[in-house]
Length: 140
Image 1 (cartoon, rainbow, N blue to C red):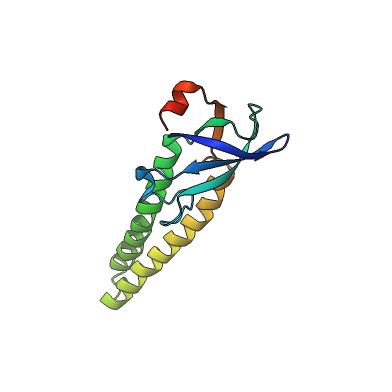
Image 2: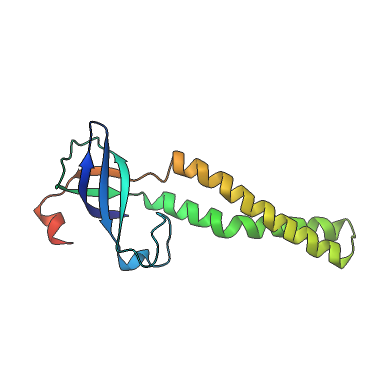
């Protein structure tokens, strides 16, 4: 996923880039953009030497976004199923099976919170690819 942003401030290594909200942002929430906000300022490593006021091409790898979505939506279902099936195989009462299912769901949500920290540190980090050229800016 590539976006065009404008450099708001910079120092030797870090840059704050402002990205405008797109229609595709509506249900994503990956960057934490609230529904009423029209833009988000993100802190990115400035490896291309972009200056304040320049437009830059920012990329977040789609594979990483897909991995994050899979974790958020699938992991709680899997852990909930494991809790339910485990209780079922142990021949526990229905109420215990339901409790085990919700316990698994809760553990899945906790696992997502832990995994989210790892993704934020490692994989789902936007990167400035280059200073935008006239063709890139025309697409805004």
